[in-house]
Image (cartoon, rainbow, N blue to C red):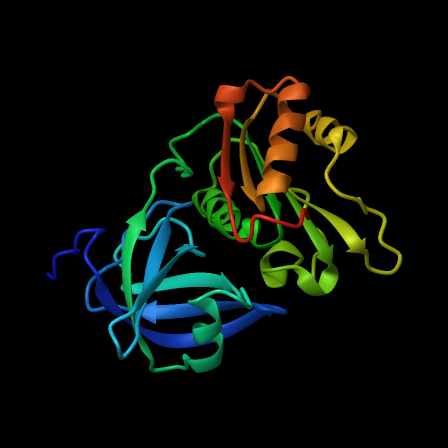
Length: 251
């Protein structure tokens, strides 16, 4: 059996599949020579090295739930036009490309099925990526703890993981709440605005007990939502927040 490398050790991952999730968002599936182990909500770091020795690295959340003995890893990556890493990935990386990756990293923004308290997940834009990892593990383990996901996104076209969050055969899931902040679909009857106090209170009332909260998205959105949760009576020590993607432009 091949030993699992240290999380801080760089190793080579080979791209096996690239899937388009939404405009400017792709999921890259990598394979490794040894198993990949992470908790839901953790992230990995990709490093690029130029011919002159210059290096650039960027952190990306795991798109899949807690891993077991698999040698595969999925990272969902949003294109940052003026970034150093994602433009290279989008323009030059293809199936068969090899990249340096290390991880998993981060123990703060994680969830496991051993947690029995209800959970309120709130994501904006690409901030839904680590939350989807948590949400998927919750479904797979069939835990009895209540979990709801609120996802703020500009339009239906921009929804990441449509095949999971909005399954075509059964319609909207009862544990996933979407709010479209720019262009809601025709005949949409759900939320159609940025997350506000009324929306937060409405969803909190669906919980049997006060939930612990995970908030992920651009900095302005995360700060605003965190404040709304505290104003709604959620203890600040039960709120975990993670900034994701650009620091400007609220969802």
